[in-house]
Image 1: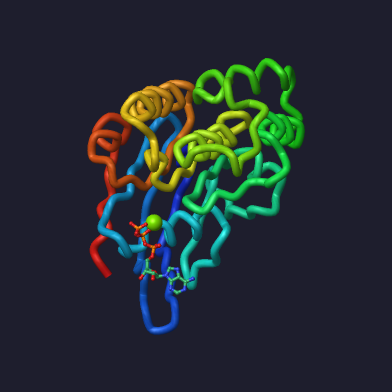
Image 2: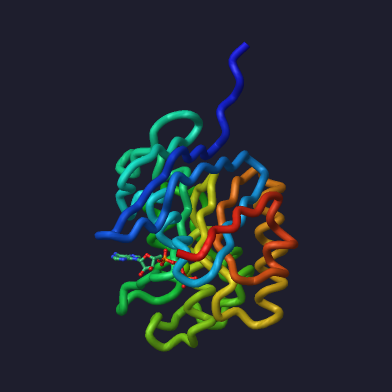
Length: 212
Ligand SMILES: Nc1ncnc2c1ncn2[C@@H]1O[C@H](COP(=O)(O)OP(=O)(O)OP(=O)(O)O)[C@@H](O)[C@H]1O
Ligand SMILES: [Mg+2]
């Protein structure tokens, strides 16, 4: 009997920058409906690992598989499955908050675009800022917009780099609830976090990277 492969499987991931081995032989798995948190001190390679897994950086060695198939970030099916919010999210300066979300929903052929965008704006607390340009938002509001971009599109795996960044205490409570709701909906979550309370509340497994 063949076993179903995990949603995400990473084997032997290695990333070297010059003489520095930042990621050495990293293995991890994320199943649907579960969350894995990567923790570790500044510079331990957490963001590098996420970028290599999400396909925005090239590992020196190792394999990344979705459903047992090598992840190819150029494939539309993979792009549909992966919702990624890294720490360097940038926005179009002349598109409003609602226009960003509308554009993403459209690009992913979401049905009922207006309904979905409205629900996400309400959920992330940006309804009052819907018409504003990213440059006029506070840093926490920009972070909420970054998170909203993941929730307005199809997804099976969420990859989040320090999603707690800049959020106020109500925002942190909302984030933990939202991520737990995503798990209940069957999503897998791979997150990097420095927030022990968020990790405690959301993560089923924790992978602690060592200082480099
Ligand atoms: N493009 C790059 N070129 C050279 N070195 C890099 C590059 N990207 C990352 N590094 C190095 O890799 C190491 C790990 O960086 P990374 O950003 O992955 O750490 P991190 O664990 O995410 O830290 P933080 O908690 O501060 O976000 C650091 O020493 C960093 O300087
Ligand atoms: Mg980082």
